[in-house]
Length: 375
Image (cartoon, rainbow, N blue to C red; front, side, top):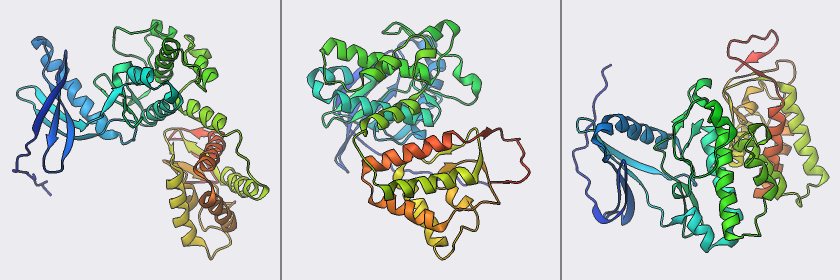
């Protein structure tokens, strides 16, 4: 069946408020939508050097594609785009962040350094989950709103990693700090991004003489020039922050039993995970999926198939046992644990569950097993 082209003929008009900035690849303006009474940032592609116009246009289109892959409170949202391929120009309509760049914000609000650090890690953790490298980490590209919300912007140099080779090469930029050792081997990966985020916060803390920073030990391992001595990625970094932040939270014997019984059944039933599979990250989403599962099996003693539970934890391919099955009572008790847990406790529970999942063997897509069923 031939696809029908849907055309929207109604033109959308905006009011120009002011120009926000101008750079080598174009300019950025603030627009107002009078219909919904909202402001938007409009980024126009219009490079100063005409000879690079066609080459850089593909980077502009690539930035649009990357932004459409992302949905996170600490990453700037893209609302629409308008491309003019014949003229090699275009526009991106984005969220307007009323605030300062992260360096200026930390000078004015040093007491919020811990909050913006954790938010920045969450943003780059989301990029890592989507296999995207920002590749231009600098103060001007991380904004903080007047309300204290971090927003990572400007993905003009960003890169979607499509295979293992995608990690190896990067672009050449005039780096604002001493580059890490792996640059001599033409390597730029998520560990490199950990380094630059760490150096950014190190610079702000030293310059601002900020003493209340709570993650000094972690920061030291983020900024190690030798990648072998550095935290590998934002997933590991996030887990360390979660574990360290909640050291004073205690679980009673019933809560521990509910978690350990369920976690043990996860590791007993899940035999192998395909290397490209991802974990379900949100505690709220895990809770919702497990509630749906429980409703469909609550009259049983054991689940008919383990996949009904495992799909609440893992997105992707995996092998599960046909000899050992989840107890429905274990699912119910774990659900009760999640329902009544505070947000902090839920984060600890899911972080521990992920550690269990990390210990499960990985396989390549063409691997075969005899006794287990592939999902």
